[in-house]
Image (cartoon, rainbow, N blue to C red; front, side, top):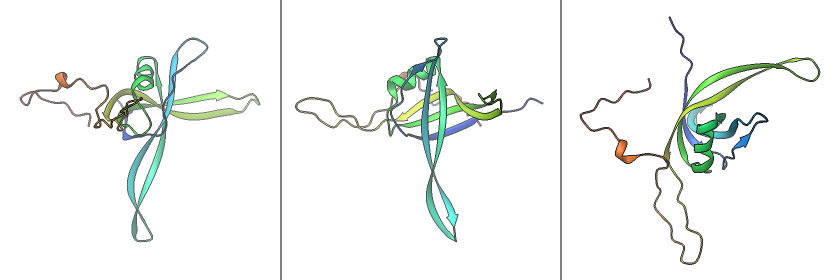
Length: 144
């Protein structure tokens, strides 16, 4: 039996992302995604925010760098990638990266036009092709 390695997060972007390049020219972006949930603490339900640091490469990094902004609601489909390396002191280090495989911009924050007569535009979905939406008769495959 094959294993499954998927992480799906739906949350808000914590800060404006920035694409950087590695020495080899690979484009990389790291960004925090905030997810909210309720937890029971001492018998009372309390809202809590969890922060997830995700990493994206190449075309996905370019997309997020161009279109995602602080506060935008994203759905990210990720894989966990364990990494092991030896630090300068010779000690073995371990970390697990949450690597974005696919992304869907669900909703952007309200944007304001710059300049005289600026007006508040209604929130717009980012990066979604409305014409590509499935017809009611089409089957839609869910990721779970």
